[in-house]
Length: 149
Length: 368
Image (cartoon, rainbow over all chains, first blue to last red; front, side):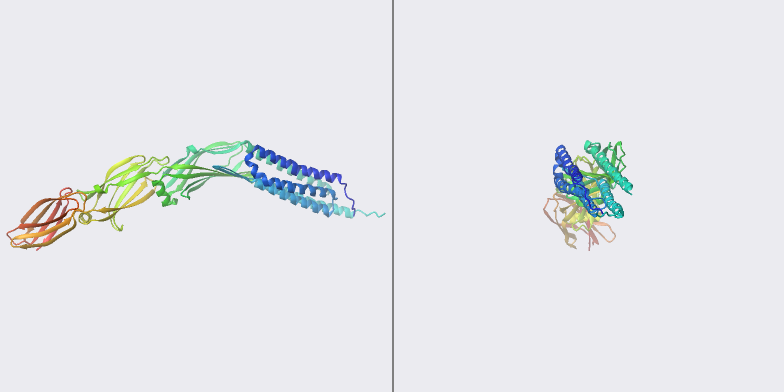
């Protein structure tokens, strides 16, 4: 079986891209929304922590997933852990989006259950992808002859 | 196989982009205020029809968003005295994309569900009613659900200010009747315009025997001084003429045609004009029929009467007669011996007390 690793450049780019999307851009958007609607500021307090913590983990595991070769169990494991982090990230963000606005004589609860279901469905399918990828590439790699020096 | 995996990955990308677009289509109209449901509180109309409380109001709904709004429920709650006084829910038709409509919503609630405590409080007290209306609904496929509660306070003005009985001026009148002046004052109320009815019943102290009852009707916002007239049987009338006692006045105040009512009790000290009426030493001796008559006038009015004695022989002929007028002041005792001279042997005598005011004749037969 081949054991050569990919270089560090591509995994690093992928990791940075994930960090930009899931931490920098997401937190910036939330800041922007909070500044537009100050009454929602308190609602997003916990969301920032989840976004920074799990966004960083997602970026890290995206890097490790890209580092390992397709067909390796490490890549599949790393990919599934990344999906798990994405799941926690998504659920925590959506839970905080189930917000309640309370004014003097007015209370509004808004939640997005259907949207969350779609997102979880997407993550499950993404997780299945890593399993399929592992079995397909692992089978192919096993069929290739090993060249000894 | 690798191509399948690539296609699968492409599908995931499209799926993710689809979710992003759906999210944007859902949230942006909300932020822009393209979805609105508004209750016209100034139109809230509250009335009672037969055994039901009916609340109606206009609501305006608008959906300029990108998804239908389904399963819309409008719930109305009224709270009084920390009790949920009314809680009704109405399901509304779906609001399609681009649809705007105004409709009149009508809630009805059986009055049986309203506690006596609440009814009593609403009739006799100014109070705040906590009104809240709640909208629930969702976009198609539960993509987004919303639950909005808006609350307000309605001021409820009591229906009845006071009901005052003028017991001191209650008097017995002709035809076995008791007349009692009454004053009632009512308030105008924003929600009810029906008449208030009073049904006043007079019972004995233990509420085991009802002597009589009378009723009156008055529009809300009016005051009325009138006289209740209680008709009663001769036996009951005699009872009240000769025996002072505690009576129980039971007043049922109700809103006409609504079943919305409350009951008030009041004890009444009734003073009989001929309390402790007694005839003693009745007999015939040496051509004279005599009897001692005594009673106390407990009534607040003076008692103006004629005492009449009639003596009969065996064949029913009147063989002796005497008649005299008296006035006994309030609280005074009456003690008098009536003497009638006759020439024949009497069989029986009739003693009559005729009330000059009411025409009522109290009669006792004395056998010899």
